[in-house]
Image (cartoon, rainbow over all chains, first blue to last red; front, side):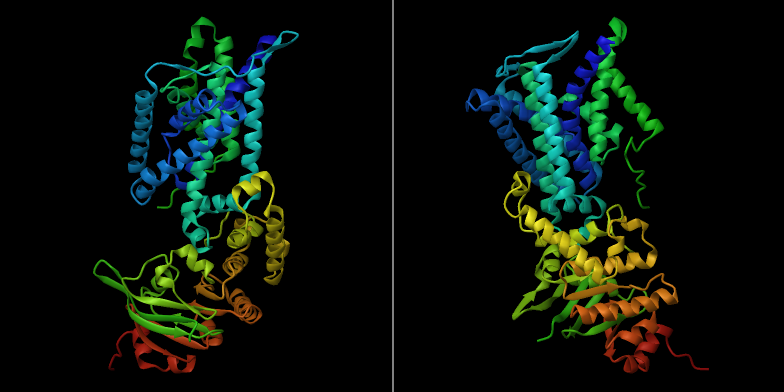
Length: 295
Length: 260
């Protein structure tokens, strides 16, 4: 039982990271039907930006977090304007291939500038482990979970209570009708990229802090798993991405905790197996709408 | 000056002229009809006027206050913000959103606050949102939809969906309204109710309306003037009575006269 609760705590903090990244996938997909495969690299970029903000700019942690979110949002906007916007009227495949290209580009540029090896992420907080009768909670896990919940709350506020959120929801339903209602669709798409990128960057900074290191390839696996989380929750659905992220994190923690030497090395495989099962059983995901393309 | 001035407007698709050298004027507070056989270019003309398509040649002028604005040079969302709005042949509401949200989206551009103002909850955010909420409700009352404000658009009955689409277009602050087959798919009672509704909002909100419609009883009843398109060309214009007896119009609708 104790082991189970401990794995729940591990799963929730890991799931927080996946959920933050999954939100970017799902928002971008919801608004322009693009799987932005460069999204994992924004997460990596955010981690580096946070690391540099602390080591070079000497910013305190929370300012560094905000700094990383802002510069990553700008990167997301530049990518959208330069790489995706010109392709908006082309085939979906063209944009998808471009996204994969951007992903490699960001990885390689980072490796070039920051080196191939891992860089240390400064330990700005003393890690404390609280022990509640056998249930161990790391102070960083609390931080990760707390920051994630605050960011999700802010996101829900933007989406449900502001004019920008209304514009995002209307563009997701019908782009052409939105334009003719006076909605600036291009700006709405750009801001969606900015918000998604900022969330991924926050996840990157948090994971850098937790693992005390950053490296250029760190975005690949979490990026893919967050994508699985978004699909699991129902791609296009914001609550779906949140639930999906936590679900994947919990599942991974359970396999790691209970799989023994037999299964735990294959926890990634379990996650991808889940993707295959979801696609077979409920292709639209937990909260996804069954969208039929018009023929 | 006329409110809307279309000057030698042409829109080609490949070798086909969907709209060909059309010039016409619409006066303020007029209700005019745009008719013609299927494929005559009526909807294409609407699409050019609202910026969905750019004209191949010619221009569209719109009188806003004492300024004359060239609509054909603006992107669609700016045309809307000038006070020009439209509805669609097939209903294109934001189906998953509530009636209230549908109207609020159309009023979005009136909200004066930025993202950071909203996040920090300072500045105009609360005032601006409260104002829009209030305006949206007041607006829905005027179009008799307020009791359905929280209903998802897709759950409204057909006639109400049509009505909401017109309301949403008006909520953009439109003074010039393009209605694309508002009575399509309606039964005679619904069409009758719609006719009353259009007349009512026109007077109440001092609108200028251009309407495409195949239901001739509706067109003849409410339009003050009628323009007739055929193969992209303007072939006639005049009062309903003039149009009814115009041989070119009859020919366009019924084909060449046949000698018996």
